[in-house]
Every structure is written in C-alpha cells, then in structure tokens.
Image (cartoon, rainbow, N blue to C red; front, side):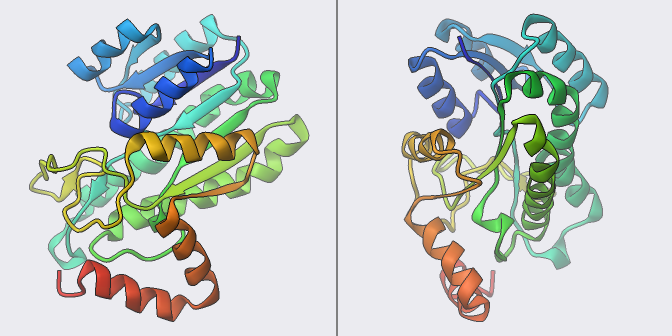
Length: 255
C-alpha cells in the first residue's frame, strides 16, 4: 500500500487531497495543528500527527515517528500554509518572518527529515504553491515572497533528487475557496488560506485536489491548477507587464 504524508491535512485543500488519496487506497499520515479539525480525521482511517510547523523540535519528533512507522514514503504533500493580506507599508517584519516559517522553512525542514524515506520509495515531494509563487500579487508581499522561495527550493531540489528516482513537483492554484467568509485576519495581517475577500473565479477544494492529483499521476513538474492559474502562468511568462496591470485591475491597486 502506498504511503503519503500530508501537512495541513485538516484544512480545506489538504483535507480534500487526503480524501481522494484515501479513496484510492493510500495510507496517510496527517499533520496539522492540534485542533478539533485534525481529530475529526481519525474517523477517516488516517494516522494523526499534531505538529506546530513553526517548532523545529516538534517537526523533528513528528518526522521521526512517521519514519519509524513508514521507512519508505511514496508521497509528501506540503499543503500547510497561511496567507498574509495587507499593504507592505502597514506590515512588520515579524509577520513576514512567520509567513516564511510556515510556508517555506517548514517545507525545508520536513523535506530534510523525510529525504531518505522518499528516496527509498523513489517517491514524490509535492509542494502546494500558488499563482503568487511565480507572479506578483497585490497586498501579498509576504505571501508571494514565501511562495517564490518555496518554488525556488523545489525547482532546485528537483535536479538533486532526480538521480535517486525522486520527483519534485509544484502545484500552483489561483483562488481556492477553502475558508470562504472565515478570514479571521489577525492584527498582523495573517489569515487562513483561501479566505480572502478579493478572490475571483474561485475553485472548490475538491476540484483543486482533482486537478493536482491528475498532475501528480502524470508527474508534471509544474501544475497550474484551474483556468485562472493556467492563464496567469502563460500571461506572466509572455507579457509580465500586461499580467501585472490586469492583476492590479482585478485585485484593486488601491487596496
């Protein structure tokens, strides 16, 4: 039986990915904050691993427990993340650091701890990025920076892991309605992913999960998820100035 590790497994997209993999017969180790939402996954036949992804010691303990149970891991889905909404002029460095800790450095640490189990399975590292990982996004300086860093890491790791038979893939959704109407934005601008009020042409988590897993099966290095993401990918590559103007018009350059 194939084994997957999913971070952010109790959230909208993570949970949708988990459900699809379980339906296909995968064993799943689910990581997320210690919340009732994580506890609910016990009924779905997964192994629960409460973990604060800003705590390096907790990440190390969690990964050690997972590898003790699963010496070979076929898939690691880095789905955990937060967004940050607000003008750079109104933000502080602490918020930027926290976004980087969760969206980028947690991926780096988990990948390091699970590197050899994934090599044993000749498996896959799948990072859930965003359109903001390859293009600019208004009022998302911290978020875009974290996703750009994530993509740079995964793309560079790809060539290092290729000789070991390991694939390093990136999925880049646009707006996925994982927490509609539940932004609960903190004073520092950090909010739940998928809760922004300025999104458009949003996808359901289930539709996004289906597109991501189709890309996984095809081992596509970059998986733009949804119509908006595909258009953004090509527009930003071919005409970045045009893309930026359209993005500002849609999102609202005045905040």
